[in-house]
Length: 141
Image 1 (cartoon, one colour):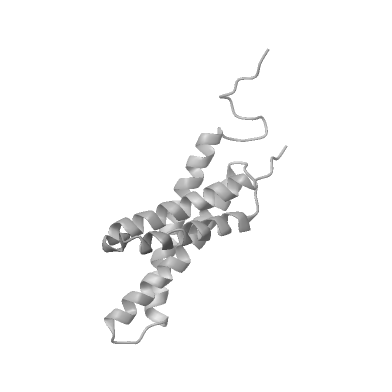
Image 2: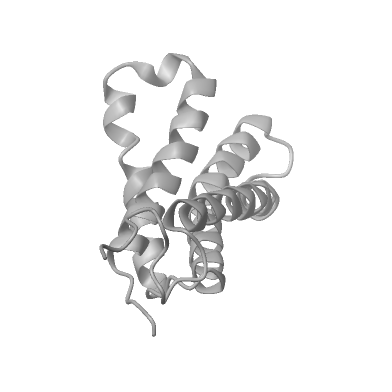
């Protein structure tokens, strides 16, 4: 009798599609929370008191620095909970590489629409973390 290709493996707690969806949701939620925190930290501690432009730039840089950290944390923690074990550094490297993949888009002229840039930053960081984390995962018995 042939095994069912749709059924999850015996060593995983969830179906692979469900596991990756849970990782994506938790990565996105923790990424947004950490980006908001990073923006607050950046604008509070790394800008002049009265200059609004400096505070805005520092806040954006804080969000760009902290978002991949939150995404990696969410992907790695939920990955552990659903039975997909991989090192945390894999999710962290993937999230930062995905976020840095946004830089060529800036040079292609997509910087006029900031909403598109924030959406692309969120998606590329999340996709990078998911791909590298699940590529590096070890199966558990």
